[in-house]
View (cartoon, helix red, strand yellow):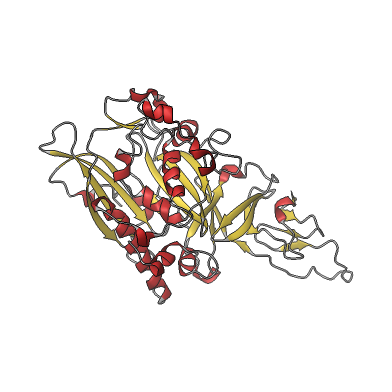
Length: 428
């Protein structure tokens, strides 16, 4: 459990909250590239770390992310005209380019030949890479070089992204992502022992398999300079005397989780705080290089996660399953063999995260042995926030450091004498 002071350090990101200030020292996803499909298309609203922003793709294809409210009279730019290299406010026509430069003020009178007064609207540096629009929200003097995400190694990767906005704090989602014990129970209808995929009538696109029926994994945690890694060891179905089934999850501060891969593809999560009480959750399935029989398509990935717009989500990626409709839980299906009565791994997870409340009160928890990784994550981040507040560098930024492109998680049957800490780290 955490006391209230440390729980606030772990969860609060708005205004001058220490964690929010720490997170501003990293590049983070603002939205998916597909949300801005064409130049001069519709702007979209984005919320990150308590700030309302607007994102748009300009005429030349570049992307701008800036304060939603016009610098002139603070009307919303979400309804502005995206044209000729900038976003124009409807109220008085002020126009900003992707860097926030005010390039036109048509209602202002100025002397003939006098240049337009130089005004800069709040806009954040942008990089577009591997399906995401990334922004840096810290001071320009502290901006690190953009580092492509951990799944950027391949020359011809398959990348499938599911996005879900959730009405709960970011830490609840991270803790779910690194918690291996719950998968054998919460997801037991969709993650099955090898050879038992037909039970409960689920379509194959919604089903994964594992070579174990062990519901009580043995956890070992290893802290790293960038966060932490841990392994969940289970007894395998075959050769239990000599082998172990290992699933390694990795947390990269401040908000990235590499969950164990699933046979033909790897997975990574970006958990981006919108504010103290809501989060943008991005779940990615990918392969480094496209080869026959590997990867997962965008359509199948979103079906499997329960993250299809119009079916599971509204147009702004908020779930259609909510406490108000009891998450559309099917109790009849539960009697027929479904463990949760809810289809989709992400739907099952979000039901648990959301029902904890907007910010979970960790002072009232009673943790068990299966929560070793969760407890370590909390220690890592609370200590990182305190260290940063003392003036120390952000966690994971000092040299020598392991490049993110070399970090992987792991899933597979291993010999009992194997050192799990050496698994999932790519060579130079």
